[in-house]
Length: 203
Image (spheres, rainbow, N blue to C red):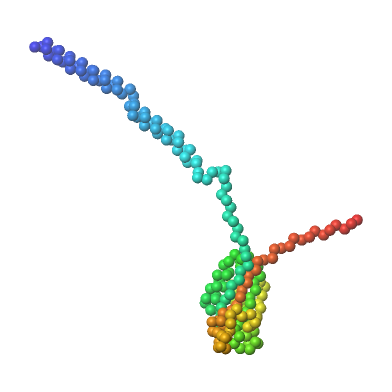
């Protein structure tokens, strides 16, 4: 009976030793999965700096420069109310908008023509057209536009753009309203002329 117990104990010891050897053999230091994960991490670290350096626009290609707008003379027509010598709110808004245009900001000369309808004498209509043109000039000067840029010309009823009367002789109210107006034209600045070098005198 004692011998059987000794044999049984030896069998248990041999089993435990065999399990220990098997476990140590399966773990040589690092698991194969750990080696694969570290290799993938190293590869991602090697790729990331290259991705950061890349750009959608290649360095050797410069962006196309923006085109400079071509300036053109500007002309607007500001209507005036009947017997009115000052522009109304709508007319002032048109003048304000004109002052925002690049052609206006370029600093070229401004011409203002005053017009009237045909109701009244030639002298009265000429004076009315002048008052309207001068009112527009005064507004521009208040907005810090140099007075020497502006030329005022009164034309009275001489240049209508619509009929003042209907064919039956009655007043054409719509036509008269179109003729009561001020035209503003902004020209481009005159480019400076190059100074000519005087010719050398013969010796």
